[in-house]
View 1 (cartoon, chains in turn blue, purple, red, yellow):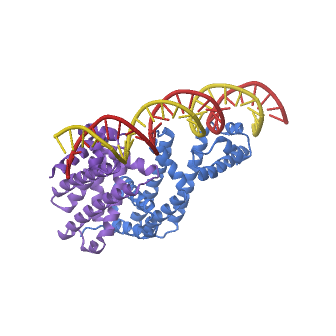
View 2 (cartoon, each protein chain N blue to C red):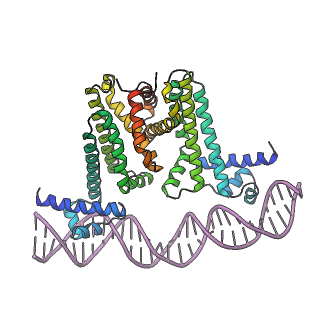
View 3 (cartoon, each protein chain N blue to C red):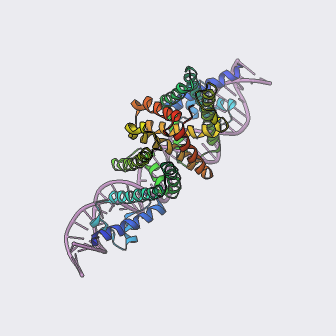
Length: 197
Length: 197
DNA sequence: CTTTTGACTAAAAACGTATTTTGGTCAGCA
DNA sequence: TGCTGACCAAAATACGTTTTTAGTCAAAAG
């Protein structure tokens, strides 16, 4: 890694900590500079503006988030366990990163969804769909899931992501942490077996 | 209906219109009084305070909402169509009542979830679970759904409500109105058949 | 006795303005 | 190339003032 990149990463890491602690809007360029042991002006040598730093932090956060979830998923032997691990890990990780998430809501509410913020969320949503799609494909390959879903694996992934998100929001909003594993298990069971007869 | 109740209903109906038009917070007691053709003081003869009027309006709104959805559901011949109608009607109706909904978000966001507001939302959530539970039971009775779900019909309803809500939010947030019927259909299909093999 | 009202008040919201903070620029130092 | 302090315009904040608003009450109206 080039020296320039090291410093950039340094700044981003410091900014990340600050933003986790105080929230996005409360973190000033001064704070970030101080945390990096540099002058405020120096930040503008490495980054175009505040938004670029924000984006980098959020992207880093998103990457780490997916890294965590993927690691948990890949530990599992079969697609069914993967789905469960996906849900459980996601909720647990999200709860920790609640600060970052609350910013998303703030931003959403204020109505001014920056184009850039929309991009970030799309990136995140895409990541989720891709990960679910990956698990579904694995399930089909291992003959756990029917091959019928193969042609609609994309729309199905989108649908599943929405469903899972709904369940997660319920768990997080109402502090149903104890029910997490049960709900994940039930959701996956229904998904596999269906309720038809 | 007693004369007193008629006037109360009059006031509530006027308040409802105002709140739909201008939002909850922007509607003043003066406005409500004027709409009812009474003096502001008179409102306090019929209601304890502003919140009581708000609650009555929201409850009325919730009742009407469920009335609409139930009517659509009851028109269907089988449980599967009922589930689809439930989703489609809910989204369409919600889109119209967006003003009232936005208040819910505001209130939620500001962090100060009144005890009363929490009650209202619980009432709403319960209504949804009950309705889904009703459809599921119908499905079991008509042998469309497996009898296995009978003992867990309550937890299953809760789960399904969350899932459906997730899908709805995706549709509403991203204006995927054209995909509404397709998504509803797919969700129900998966729910019935499952993706296992 | 029931219903309605205008006058009134205290609290909250809206407003305007002075002050501070903050994002960003730039010339220049090392 | 890497970094800085001085500087500026714009945004956020603080604060005093005014206006609006929820709620009370004594009394009028029916």
